[in-house]
Length: 307
Length: 307
Image 1 (cartoon, rainbow over the protein chains, first blue to last red):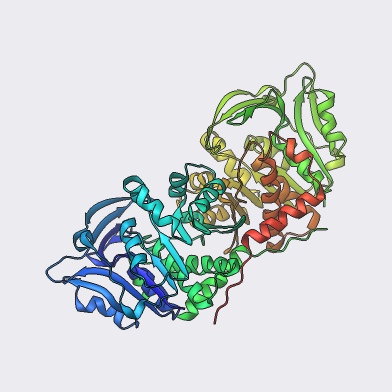
Image 2: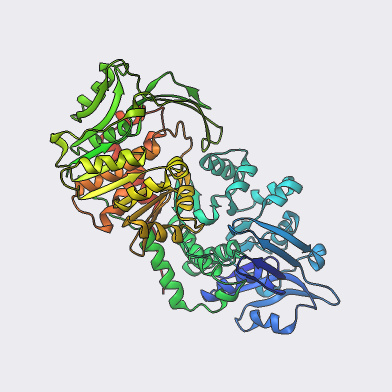
């Protein structure tokens, strides 16, 4: 299956207890597209950058055969830039700079070559922008996956609810699930969000893993316990990318496939946090991915003798 | 194998958002012993109560064939009493009353009939009391399991370290593991605690499940997502009881057995929180236990197609 990715392509500057970077390539769509290419899934990116982004950075997509016909370059514009500093626990961070730049007036264009995408992954953007992508598709993709965050719940809840109503799979964190539903219990929150539209609800819990809810069924995966989280930036996007790409590869939307997709997303995200930005992700081999999936199996498999 | 349980037998008065109880039977050793009896593991309790505890409450142990030769009854004494109120999230609570009473001068006695215990489970008590039990055993049990808490780290760290040095399996929560080791990363914390003595380190994460570390290997189990946690009191003790009793039943100390034991402990603990105190636990059938273990299998089992 073919995957259409909509999201930011941007610059980040990151500081963690282990060091800091200058401007490096980031953005949700970047992580997602690299992840998809690692799984050999045909994909394309719809996004916008300024001409400061640089040809050598666009090559990251080109050399991976990622369709960038939908990657608009604004002459004289500047790319989205985010800078943040993580605290010692690496679970919390301060945003130092957010320059929205060309993303401010982003009017996504879906090229003809991507109109036949089977899966649409909508990265974290204004819900009206996400909705407009769906409207621009000649036919609804078979699966619509939505990533969003509390910022849109605070500032554009009604638009967000319209987008959620058209979503098959929503991916949010535990606090966002609570905010969206008004329920503290994640089981109740997931039920409530089901009723808003999505048949599948993924609740991400960072270092505690993720939970997938569907039709009264539930699947949970712990995060791989890591000695050191070096830089959490992009972990959530890598997760979403691995999730969507695995489904595209498998080619069906069964619950068993979704479960495996959560594992693949978790496995890839556990690599992303080992180095700054996309540094670890881009160097991964297929063997690395298979190895890490095996580690998740060892992490969770058990046999109870019951008599 | 035979299990010796040392810990409190007490009264609790509990308030949650769902209601409140008068004085009901509680205490770590109570939860652990009931759990062991549910798994048909021969066990005995070493503890102390006042004569206010009442014969009908002692019957809880007698009718389950739990050896109470080590349950001292202090004439004219009052049993340990704890009263607490849980907040709306049920993850945090305020202690309203702690009356140590007869537990203040607890001098544990190990009856001859329990000297041949294979497994010793030391519930949360002063580390010097825990150490004294070990000294009173004619021969060291094959496996020593230690439950403790931050209170002893704050007030008796040196004694606690002596106890930990003689421990095979330690069970603590994530914050306690961080405090004990001085490491934020749980992987590093577990390594540090390994070096203090225990070959097996269990880190409990409440609603996020538990992690077992052993000799560079790791096993993680998510908690069963529950619609409603009614009363978390005794969940940790039930976990420890299910863990120890499963090992006693299985009869070996292999990592695979420890993994399964973590699942059994988690399954039983997930029942305990469904009602006040021991209310849910005492009504469980073997079928219930098998059913919940199956739910844990469904919760975590997956099959990734890797090509």
